[in-house]
Length: 234
Image (cartoon, rainbow, N blue to C red; front, side, top):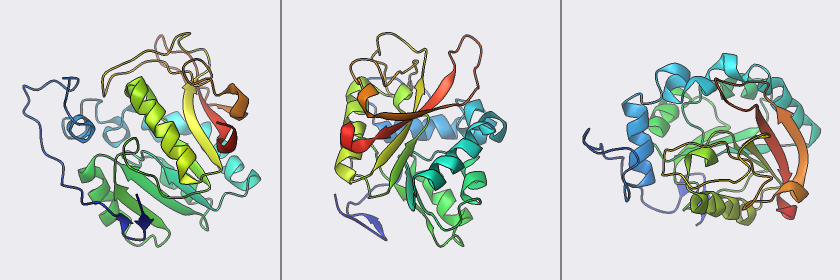
């Protein structure tokens, strides 16, 4: 896929609403429909703009300064947020690195359309509706993916990692549970498990540069972290 200032060179149809009788996890339901309905129905609640409590600014208070430090330490000039979700807290980071180019991608087209309106005056912020697993990614110094892979089947996670490698990015900052499952498991689209990208079948420990602890845990959850990976070694 070719990317330019207008986004991916592929025509994307607007998201269709699923009937309420259709389950989120029903086999064969497209990714865009699953996540669009999750947002429109507030399946994860109102917190974090519909992205869930983990996307509340209070839940990212520890992570945000660490992310700014990584951006400055590694000379990051451009970041791809894949997926960007409701953007409930990321602007608090972007305000501290105003010269960095930011691109947010999400499969929920209605969410992206709202961002394009709300942040139209931000000349170095761009938003596109695209599937981060099954469409090519635009080039950026770092790909940021905090809360995505744990909601996807393993084959989708592998496809995303392949897209990151092929995008030309230097770094990937990805959400992981440092004490997560000893065996990463398959879940339906929109499901959830404690992914650990250092364990099989990902086994990305040889690409690990830093671990950023979020110091946030929810009931019965293991601590959440962000793993900074060198893409060339993935």
